[in-house]
Image (cartoon, rainbow, N blue to C red; front, side):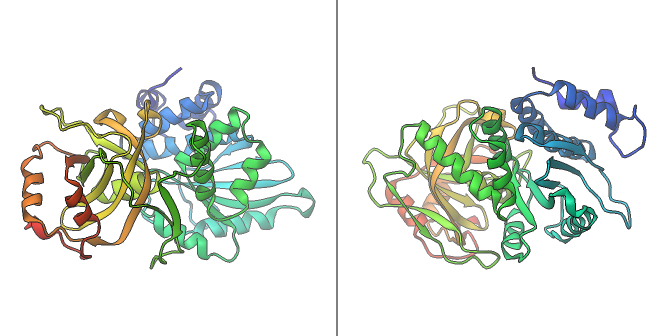
Length: 398
């Protein structure tokens, strides 16, 4: 059964930390525990929580993430919404008896900090309060939503922490892991190890997800047209693996320039970082303007442009996602959503110095274009765009 989160919040009232068993917070949490019984229902409500800014949506999202722990095999405890001076704040925690307790912190578009020290102090204080005979330990888990802008800085911080007491994972990876656990495809002990054995839980879960989907699609787990090599070290973090395409391409492959624009929910930089870079998804905007361009398809190559910055990466379209609402926020604004493969994001953007191409793209773009607008380019144009000179200004934008 599906529920409308915003209607539910209107009915229960404003979520806050007021005490009492009949407060809006307690009514909302009882509803979640009693009625929201599947990972799919949680995923749908999490997507709805992203549609509006404000404390109500953020607090509902916090409780929904905590609720997800039930499907991962944990005992769950909801926490507080607001910080109190001098007190340890806990948004919620998951417990695996006689093994571990996980302090959950949810970071979204309204989270301005990339610092983990507050969570680390909370974990340290909670660890000190555990009796030695408990046989459990505390760890912290930063759960990042799609539009948390500090995701890369957070990853870099976690990689540098010597204590390994804080981990990070995205809501997309967490939902996938909960799906696998609910279906009996991973055990609770597997889940616990993934979430507590290293700082980059998101990488490990994403790797499992990609391998699983590759096998399910009849592939061997590594695309035959690609190789994997370490990228150069990023200035704000550890080395990253970049999937780099071999030069062989089918003669009928299409080539596209994807212009990333502001839309109702995100900036171009947020689309690039949260959706394209971290989740390897591309939603092509539905402009509703006839005639449509020739349809992009699986196997086509795309490069990404942000105006006044330049070409910021390239990749290849993978399979079409039939139920996009399950994996991307506001899916109805897209005509189609693709998975991406062979994705490379550039350390420094490439300048577009082809005036004719730039003017053609601008002329073909409707006034209402938003999000990811796709324009066909030739193979030669694509090659020039993706191997062009580095710079920080789009030459044709003036």
